[in-house]
Length: 394
Image (tube, rainbow, N blue to C red; front, side):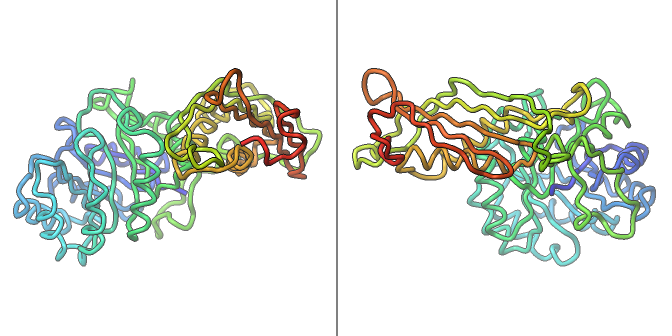
């Protein structure tokens, strides 16, 4: 599960975030976008938090010189920061900066922060790992209201998280994230999700942090007892509506449980699919129609905690088709169904995939998979063409 990082400006906001259950308290100068925290700010906040949560501190773009960054990192570590986040925009000598920080990784956890809207480069991850960095994070530099997902699609973010983990680095995602983004990003298994704007009154990142909005964000991220900072207060009480919304069914084995339908219709993507050699040369247009039967909540939906987002379906499709060439349409449909059924709130899934570029009309396959038996029929859209062979329609 992911940890929740709350970006705050002072000890009063830090206290609000701690009480609402944030896992990491992050200090930055929000007036500068990704602005540098001062040692005085860190020292006061660490004293206020009193070891209930780890405190991180930002070194932002104003400190663009590697030597200057190293001096600031030392000062923030001396002030008590458990993590020091280093902004790494492309106009910084990024390689030199990463290497200059290597000696400090023995004293504090260093997190390299790259920017989705300013030249993030996954190729820097090996150097960060070699230099002893604890993790790498994606954020947005320009705080214009555009979110991380406006700059990078879900498959690119998945590659970032997987790349970080492959190099033994924690992976963090931030950048004007909103509550509907949370279940989508949890699918990628990041170690940290970071927030500022979503925690503030009226979603104004320059306004004060609001206890209610912090609690709303916290409630969408299931608490991870293995990752919580030891020695502090236990995070806010588990909200079982959250677990259901994220896919943990309240009673997945109850065959009589009421369900609702979530669907995606006529979702077209270029896909590398097909058994013929020539089909590997370029992607072809494939249409997806998916219907998921979802165990119904016990009350009218009020916010993101109460719903199973259709974004989880479209994101699942995008990630699967981005991985590799798939020879069979049946395999493509099975992978989609299997991924969506990893959410135990899904009782039944029907997946229809159609090739649209093979000539007049369309050809394809439709499958249905259920929980708990996981048994279903394969229904070809055009059985005459398939002659009853489930592998024929490719």
